Length: 436
Image 1 (cartoon, rainbow, N blue to C red):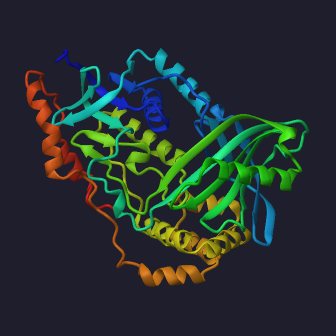
Image 2 (image 1 turned 90 degrees about the horizontal axis):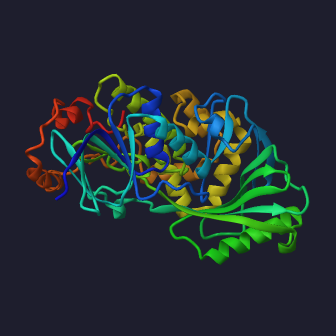
């Protein structure tokens, strides 16, 4: 076995969550040694990340475009809606990665490593990363976004929906797009195998990303998405294939889980990003949740504290998500009515605040009262409030932890650090009190 190298923090995965955490650690002037690991750091342009936030958002300067106005259409309601307290941001993965990596490369305490990850191991005093090159790297803590926890059971989901989409970024011959207004939803009433809509991000008057998105149990064949997009472009903008060229394509599948992921992989190894349950079950949005945890975690580490356990969403918001997921999974026509009434009767800023889980209970009631309610009443009979319980098994079981600890028996010659037992950290943070 090759000689082990020691760091304070190891971050595995240079995607949204890993890069965000590393960036915040530098921003908060964390002085420990950081190792960021991925099989490749080469910027790609395969994804766009979109989110709403305040105008002074830390990543505002990286945004490719921002919008204050949006268009929504469902059934008999269509309207242009405006934001007052928020902006809608679009960040290209390539821009985000390039900007963050430039910052990290200038930091004397950050090391970048391109290697394939094989496994993790840990005990109460240290964590180990094992790569496919048979190298071992030790740290006080590892944050990982590449492996699902071994005790995560996808079959336990009540409503195993997927948000799946295919988008094409097109350049048109004529200037036809309103570049100041993005389309958050143009609901497709003709598709009945899931809740489907068109989502459009206009980058300028003749360039836009047009996505066909569906909430359903199974993805479609690629040609089915493309056919829907072509039909939409022709119906909405009178565009035929001769009037535009496709610059790039974007495809994705986002699990819409109705149960929380485990925040702990094993002792001293934490799950972040989608594998850590940061994706909101009913919407698929992840960016803002990653931002909030990364900032909080970096501030704790920079002041000498233990990293906070990623908190599960409060009971009431998980309950709201569960009710909506049931409707989306069981009744597509009612789903259209819910979104129509929501965007017709609630200010856009309040909707975004609610989806960000920043509303108080009175504001929750205002949002819920604006929605078409019969399907929610039916869902209440299946999932009565207070009696509905969510999975609280948020830490690896003892058998899994023991398996992961066995590897470190060979590393006994490496001195332990002075950190206290991570099991105590779990207890202090009330990990088992999953919902606040």
